[in-house]
Image (cartoon, rainbow, N blue to C red):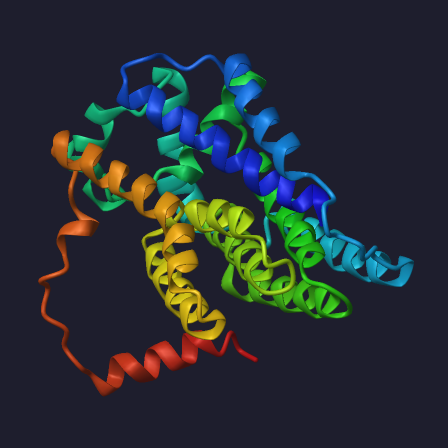
Length: 291
């Protein structure tokens, strides 16, 4: 669990530093950014109040599902098309530009990449490409399996094994490897466990910040989690304090996108919602994951 929360903080600190560097017009240096990554990891991979240790049986079971997923992704059985057409190209261009390539995002031919989409995933992939001296599509695929194992380790007791089994099945059926979903779920599970089993507002705020900067859906999750926590804990002021970092970070990204003429996804709030039984039936079929 300590390592998993260290990774949560490391990714959030790293990508936040990359975003603010781009906003300030500073070119990225992969090794300087490594310091931000390491600082985040060391700050949160601590053991205060974390008495429970994973049993051997639990570790073996989680490892089995992790290895099964690694086999699936490294034989290209679970690859998400968005990695090839969305996350990957953004990461390549960002790594080459040593920053968020606004001109690339604004190009009309790239509109379907959603120029204002939260940038955490391509930033993370771009940093890896800078460290390695080139982008490899296999790295995000392998990261999917690693994230599955880390996500399962966040859940106390035998629930971690169930989590590993559910994610292994869901990622295979949903073809999620290399996409943002495994990273989003990693942050969401970390936030929920921090709010419940650990009751650690700092870790919860960091994880929710990561969720908000990973996908548009992440902001909706943050809102629901904060409201639920305020109601259940009866600590509305504490809930608001937890929400500050995610709100500031996402708000800064939206402001950056608006300033550079990139607003797309976040400008659709006024789009009319049309109810359709056919659409709802299709959603239900997709949500079943062929279970």
